[in-house]
Length: 392
Image (cartoon, rainbow, N blue to C red):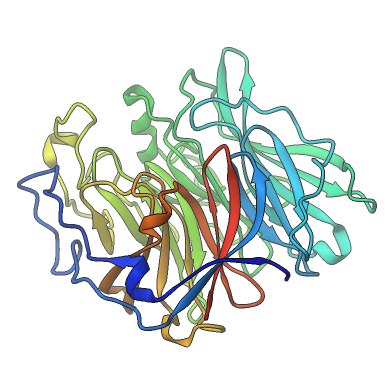
């Protein structure tokens, strides 16, 4: 890929220490040692930061096509292709209308596992329905000339529509069997967020569906009359990052907490991850969440959490293909924190934290590993861009 080398820095100049600010949810104790505020680390590899493409407006989702090009979404409602030379294509026609406000708009995009044959993609977006708004997932086929989407259909809606324009979630991921995983937020409002605990609602869930939007075979609640067949796991607030571990295939997830209490979880099918019954954060008015309860029987603990909040969005567990030192490290894009977090892991235990790209000063939407082994990042800004990190 042709790109411009914008800046060259060693690791010491783009990394800082672990969190030093006072906690917001004072008095809370982690469930185990190392669950938060782990020791600071510093990588030794010297990196170069390249700009791949500029001229984007609030990029949200990105995936790589089989030929190495990228397909990317812009939150106001566009899907575009970036060629191998970093040229940004025109908006592809046929994208369904989105409601672009607050958290809502055109969000993630992934290509189907059989894209080389089917040319199908899936994308998530918020749409207006009746008197409210819903997070939705659509499927369509990219025409051979790549100017339009064909056979577009909405395959899933997280209903009912409500007035909130927040906490849509809608991170997408294709699993090893070709089924689609999607995160669904609990929609923010206190009167409805309790549905994150209800198995007859898709609010606050990870769902797993087939190409038609039905629950995929092997889902944990198939056959239960009191549960939706599409639910894979539940009890989430607003998860916006998912990634598979490149070695063991485990599903990892990032979740926005309220005022503090941002989480990293390892997802097991059928498990309950606690929201809004337990939390390491506070309400925005600084009141305790559910009386300050942080642990409860039959509810999973995060393997790591942050206080104050960093607003974790997209995540990636790096294979080490291009930068061996970083093999199996977890990278977390941070919106509020405006930096990239690197976590070293020993199984499910976080052993160190480094904060990168602090000087960039951008809300980072997501991070992923490209087919070339580089780390690709994009920002959540009106002057959006895609950059990559490669060794000097």
